[in-house]
Length: 385
Ligand SMILES: [Fe+2]
Image 1 (cartoon, rainbow, N blue to C red):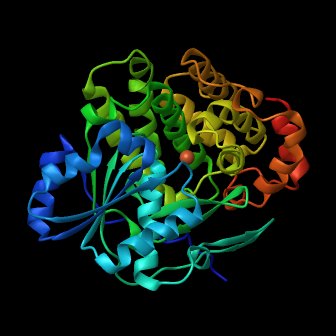
Image 2 (tube, rainbow, N blue to C red; image 1 turned 30 degrees about the horizontal axis):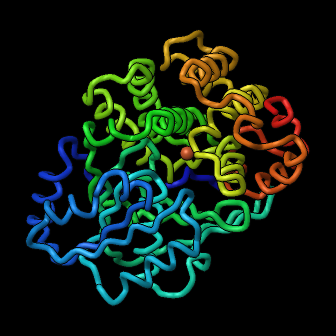
């Protein structure tokens, strides 16, 4: 029997740097979209006045805004948004803000296409090996994203939803946003600690994506060049720089995001999903704590050590797992991000339950070092308690 590599699916999208208002106006005009559904978070809507801004931008369109989004895109909120938009029958969904808004938009597109419950469309995973993807064929309402963080979700057809203390995910190439509007000036207004956390997240997308059991020539190319670009912006971004750097980081994050449904991620994401959904910690801050520890855990696997060397070389340090872990840890510390679980509000007694749930997260399946049981994850977490 010949074993073939998995197919490489290259999504059809565009990444458009510049002021979002002019780009969106032109795009809506080109495509002839008349009814525009807008999805964003409540904090984002209140702090930016986005609803008024998009109405002032698209004066010829009919606009319906749902601004009830909260971090980690809870399943119930996503279903509520879909119910609001169903009678409106939008031509396009515009999502603005952090990754949860873009995740929510994809869930809305799925529910508008198929009806039913969101969890019916999420993939299932039973450790160690029973991973069941859920293809979602057929047309969907197109999505345009205006990202203000570096979530990766802005550019791909994958999305996660908080449910029962973990995250459930759906993914299909048909959910890839039609366009990503990368506006550096707009992203520069994001609260600085959240933005730096999302930068740590984007860096760790590259690290985990390179080391994933499913990486391919396509994803390695994206992650390696994306990591080099993000690393070259990273410390300057900490110093509150000009908008151009936010634009460069935004383009790099989107390119990396494109590759994620091809490779998926690894153990840091499995753990981060649980800590985010159970404790409300920002996704990026979880990576500040966990990413170095997971690199060290995976270093024992030869294929992971090779991927770590590639990543370390891309960020300009000695090509080794140790140097990569140290570089990630020193970025988190020098940017003032949390570096322990207790700083995230997670006490040691919670570790066994987090480890058990993370073991059942789909991203532990893609981790390069096979995770044999929840106890291995608990031991890793105790080291960063
Ligand atoms: Fe992530």
